[in-house]
Length: 101
Image (cartoon, rainbow, N blue to C red; front, side):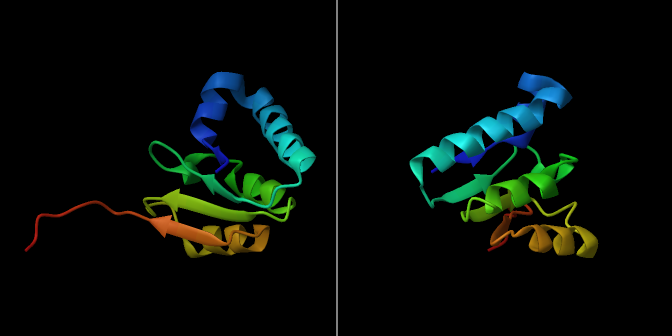
């Protein structure tokens, strides 16, 4: 399944190249006329990326299912509204593991 790692985009391509790289991925997916789930993930938290809402919207414009995997620490009511407004379909959150039995 296609996935986009927002933090890697920033490190590999710099701030100015991020949108160009995302556009390249989107154009490639359009060429194949695929409607696959698209996961936005990060090593820490994709919500740290300042362009995450825009990324969700641009991928959703492909008529794809957009999913976000986050630890939820930055997921506020306002961020939730923005992501839903941009077309986010699913969010999966992990807060950590505990050793309770």
